[in-house]
Amino acid sequence: MSKSKAGLAVKAKKYLAAKEAGKRAYQRADRLLSEIAGEVKPGAEIPLSDNGRKAILKDKFAEKDIVWTPCAARRWELEVIEP
Image (cartoon, rainbow, N blue to C red; front, side, top):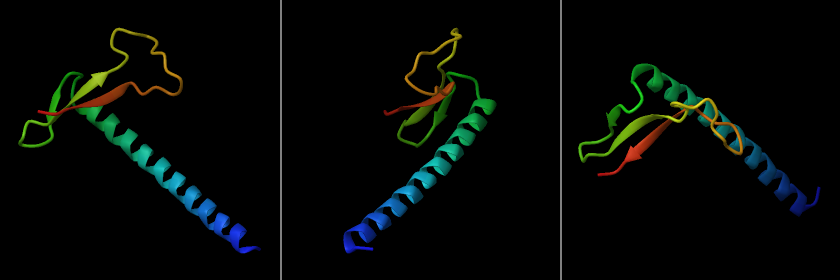
């Protein structure tokens, strides 16, 4: 294999590994958000620090049956509020 093709193969392998790591990270994030949604009600404030930074659980499907998006839509979202 030529030097340039070998370099491309290395980049392709790194890309695939990064993509897989991202997939695992999104799965973990989805699990954590689901746990949060099971523990607090929408609109609940979650303090993130002593300086007033907080997160609020938002239900994007509240009072709606359909939410239009160009791809998959998650019901829950944490909105971060900066002081």
